[in-house]
Length: 334
Ligand code: KG4
Image 1 (spheres, rainbow, N blue to C red):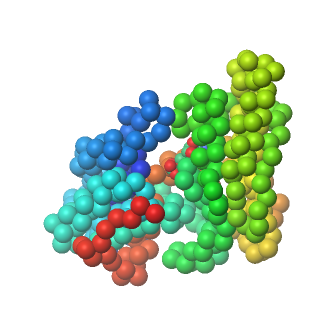
Image 2 (cartoon, helix red, strand yellow; image 1 turned 45 degrees about the vertical axis):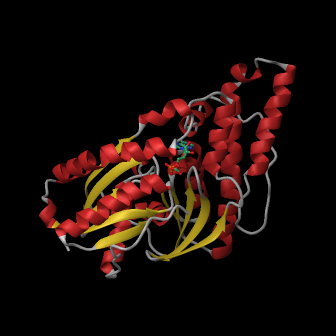
């Protein structure tokens, strides 16, 4: 095995990465789509059209950046799902044709598993990676899960949201505050200069599961009541509101995660997904690790959002098990 080329196209980022047999990244090219900004969310049809336009230039650049020829590739990995069907189909069709043309194996990857395995992406051969078993908090725009990993291919979801995801909750709050989409980075930036003066009610459901719908409603109703008293409440208190929202989401996330660390006596913890870029979540996860004597793995910013390097790593683990896909498979949205 020499190199794996991977494709990611599940939502609104077209990405191609190349890694070697030591999990080291040779290139990781990401083309983001600006077209959705004015709509306040991803428009599926526009996303698939942009993937169509981006995919060949992105793959071409990834090969050039890695300074290798396509003849040196050993396999093609791709995100099969979950994601937007039209977006996934662009990547799946490209990966199938590319692997067929080069006569090399094809490897299908689950997008969520790839996010968790992002901790095994190496920028240098010496880079430390998590030891098993480890517990990963996967937090993105569409998912909130606590995953127990016994090995790279043995993952168990021990808790998850029964309604909204953490990122979705932050994005909805940001929308009420008239912040641009996606709201997460704006809430994070404003929260740095605010104080958590507002207390929102939070659901507490069983075991390691989450529910964010109550918190979302509480944010909406609290701000509605404040606006009745003072129509300029939001403009005058933007930083404090952002800080209160962020704290409420991080409190909810870590309460269940801490319970899981204690119950399972875990010594390695990690966070993954788009929301893991959040500075408060990163800082408080490290504090939690210090409290329980755990080794903490927090991904580089560029590996928190959608990228093909994580797909390549997940693909390499499957390659090592000779677990290949055939040309008849299709994408799955859920
Ligand atoms: O994993 P991801 O890139 O893709 C989706 O699941 O769509 O996650 C995107 C989510 C969005 O909700 C975005 O607002 C959130 O990650 N996000 C953040 C930050 N950066 C991105 N949330 C809080 N703080 C951040 N710094």
